[in-house]
Amino acid sequence: MFNFFDEIKNNLKKSDFLPSFNLINLSGKILYVEGHCGLTILSPSTIAFKIKKGRIVVEGENLFLSELSQNTLKIEGNIKKIEEF
Amino acid sequence: MKNNSRSRFKIKSLNQEKVFNKIVKNFVVYNVKEKNGITEFEVSYRDGEKLEKYLQKQNVAVLAVRHFQLRFKKFLKMWGIFVGLVLGLSLYLLQYNFIFKIEVWGCENIDDVEIETFIKNHLNSNFKPDIDTVTLEKLIKNNFEKVSSVSVAIIGQSLVVNINEAVLPDEMEGNFEPLISQYDGIVKQINLVQGTINIKEGDIVKKGDILVFPYIYDSDGQMLPVQPKAEIIADIWIQSQDVFYEYFVKEERTGRKKVCSQVSLFGLTIYSNTSENNFETYQCETESSFLTQNNILPFIYTKYIFYETKTIEIIRNFEEEKDEVIKKLRENSLISLDENEIIIDENCSISGGGGIYYLSYTVTVEKDIGEGYGYQFPQS
Image 1: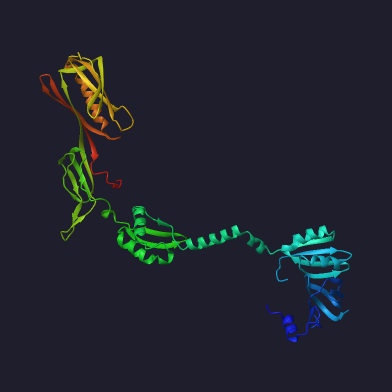
Image 2: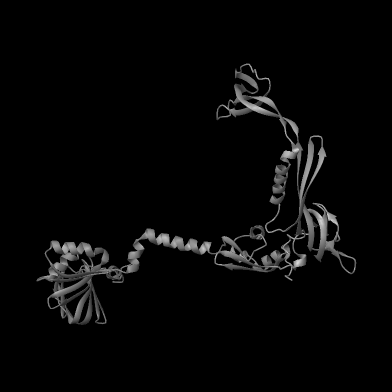
């Protein structure tokens, strides 16, 4: 099955610097995440989750998780900031 | 979540993030919203009950659980009913295109069974679109003379045949048999209604004589069949006869009898119980029956009963018994009369002699010997 992210990684041939997670931000309304390692904060203004080598914090308004599985999640709302720690 | 069948949970936990990290190991959750420490989320309906039990095990405070499922989907799970309904509906729609019954209405003088059989023989199939009602109407009209008009219609799953019978004029109706006298007598008055008269006033008619022929001749000399009708008033004679013997011999049973029996098979006597018959004169009665109920061996049991008889001489005097004999003859004659018939005359004739007398008692009554064909004469 075709995977967009795998295809990009294979073309770059530099997998060592690539992070183990993928984020797609759609117009600041939807954030799709692959490769999360668990939620850390869940509130309407902040959603944070762990990744392999750190943590990502998403800030905004009226945020909620429209989908959550073991390693993917989808955040909907007015996304204002995405930070990696 | 595309599927509308879901379970919605409302939970309260100090570390809800940890709870979700545990839940997602086994379930996928949707629409996770947190507000004032209370978190709402949804899972698929299929996982709802499992997750509820899981949360109870994890000691998570579940504030509310609601399971949403489309009624139609629930219904779809009842495969038996669903398949039955679909099959039933299909069969109903299929069979609705056929007729199963033929109803014939309006038959009084025509045999409806005959028409029903006729239609069955002329139906190519019971499939509604194949039935041509107009052709059927024409066929019935052409094949049944007594049908004046007919309509054939398909109503529901019945083929309804509505018939109007033709009304024949009175003179054409009925059987064209001649009017025959049922009595002996003398004709006094004739009022002919239709037909050709064969008698005239003053004629003596006997039982079986033709009174009116069942036809007329028109002005062209052509014979037209009609039902004969006439009022024929006649003095009819009702007679009783007897013969009186002053001397005669009669055989009478004495009361003694003898019974013999025998069993036979295919005409051969198997067993016989006969004793000597000493009666000089006797009468014999025989009774036969099968000894067994089956027909494998048809043993026939025959019983002979011999009744001893004696001969008696009877000597009577005619003059002494004449009145009694005449009275009996009169009674016999009167029995033949209809109710309320007026007796015009009655007489008794005696002939013979030498110990043998012939008696005839005659009652004369006035009667319409042309009646009985349903014609009612107007009251004068």
